[in-house]
Image (cartoon, rainbow, N blue to C red; front, top):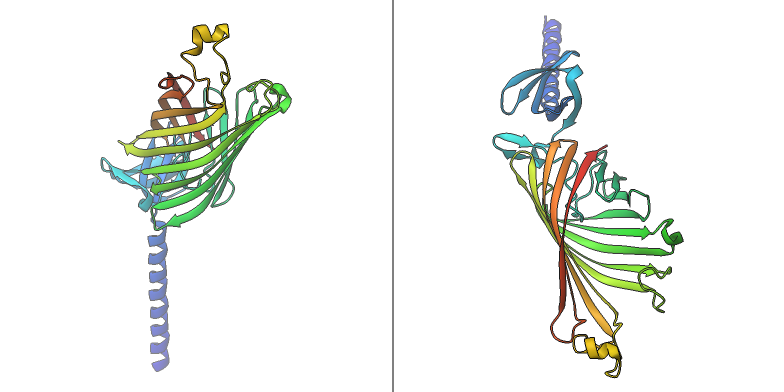
Length: 336
């Protein structure tokens, strides 16, 4: 009798552990997912059952729905801690959260969330190589000039302050037989998360013109500059984000009017207007890029920008020489 009691007790304990294990498995399996349909529709919720033909999903807005698996183009795990609830719905981060319009923040590209960005002037492709390193290729539509980019995530201070280092190396390609090349190297600090953040970047850029295309026949073939950037992004509604991007570029160049005398005909007509005393002229270029990004789906987005360029230099004798012009543009982003 005691043996039977022991056996029953052991069986009971076994089943108790089995039930607990099943509960733990079912609890672990109840993860938030983003289901993308072939027609672009998206549903976020927990998968309750999957019979191989259709999925029963408990959505965050309309309750339980059945979705035919033949209508599904992708299923992506969603981290609830990294989503925003807007209008009662979860908004997933998406694969483009490391990018503003032109610059980027410190956060690394997630694994398997490589993306392409199609600009009016040419394409870009960015790849996640590891958890902290990404590489990219940028070019014009004629494949010249062409540039290689890299970004290394350096770590964080707390949960919301992140740091990275980036580099772009460019060459003119078959234009001028590759005799023109340059680079941009920078550090970035980002405050916030992937959906909502601000960033400050500072770096050094240069261009070497061995072809004489930009600098003529002057002896110094190199032009360098200090570059700083302020940028930020914030979600607006269920699909859109407001982006502000900017770059301030400051450099010095040789003054072509240095040393001109009042005996020349040029001086008679122009000399009183131009700076002839300083050997170098300081140029400052401000590029502002307010933008709107619209996520068409988890894997697709487009953005428009009403960019403007302002140039200021001290080439005039009195005051500053200022010019400005708008650069409206549009681009498309795709995850691959």
